[in-house]
View 1 (tube, one colour):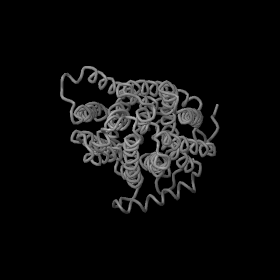
View 2 (cartoon, one colour; view 1 turned 90 degrees about the vertical axis):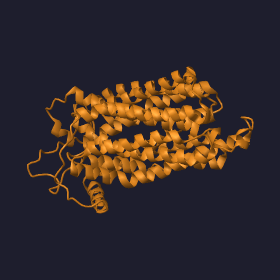
View 3 (cartoon, rainbow, N blue to C red; view 1 turned 60 degrees about the vertical axis):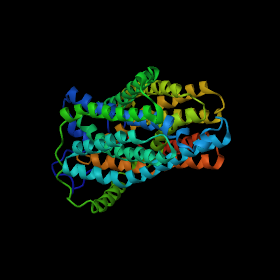
View 4 (cartoon, rainbow, N blue to C red; view 1 turned 120 degrees about the vertical axis):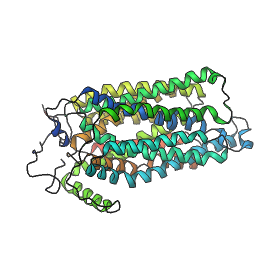
Length: 472
């Protein structure tokens, strides 16, 4: 378990229990919530941040802007774009865009790995988690709004990829503060359910956003010209407005916390020295938690790969039309949202480790089937693609829940910063293997195998993470 040293805990601190009653490694920070009644308004307002920012993940990063626009023939040379759809040169040119986009996300992952733990550590000390959550969310909003200026043409591909990559950096850093705030709005008995509510509302928010896109498409944008990628550019602007509107509840209803007051105040670069000491202490005092961070880093990158490249696979390998991708996106988010909300109750009952392992096994099986039967047509992707979505959300939610259960009070930002960093330290795996296998074999479906391999390695590592048995 993670314990507190005299440097960061007072002599009167409450003793840390050996076992968590939910099957986690330990329950430390959440002990301070014992006996508290969390106002439902705070819980829902916290969870709505996932709803507010989901359009970036669902509409921009996964199903619409990137898959249907940024990695389409609109960004290859006109000569290649004019070739028949089945022409190998045209296919390879579009697939190359997928590889280049994967490289941009890889660079973004490196930046998160460098920045996330220090930002979390400093927010713990200053007590400004909500402030930094809002600052980083605002940067994501700006990136989405600037995508309006990404016109259709090869010259604008780098701008589009850069804005999406930068947005993903600050989305991840914002998530550090958001995840750290989980212990403010939950108790040991409800943390799994609350975490699942956040993820679930996020997926449902993605459904609503995609439905709006589908409706606008069917109404032919009320006669608006869609030349030069205008429809996709307006969608990006709309996503920015959506986030601004729905982030308001967390601003109004979830209070800021006080700083821990136990950490030395240092400049930004000196923070990395403290970070190294924190990692060393984690290795000495809580080896199992350290290895959980390593294992989760690997499999969470595989989870990210499922959504980052899912719609790209649908269009490139399974020949989905634009409308079919949008409809699949709605179904995928519905399946993911419902399964995640339901899994929160299993998390509180059986423990998050059991939920994680079950989900990873399902992901490896469904992903392998998608790769092996890639020539099976659209129906095959509907079946196994939705199965993948059913397992992604529960694995994500249970991972956050497990870490919340083992985090000492006042160090949530630091530990979730490490969680983001270890995840991003391995974030080159899915996009890297995706790009490498496509480059080696020439066809997009080989990228599926790269994602499956990452998930399989994460599953094996998670098997060696020991957790306390569930108390009766």
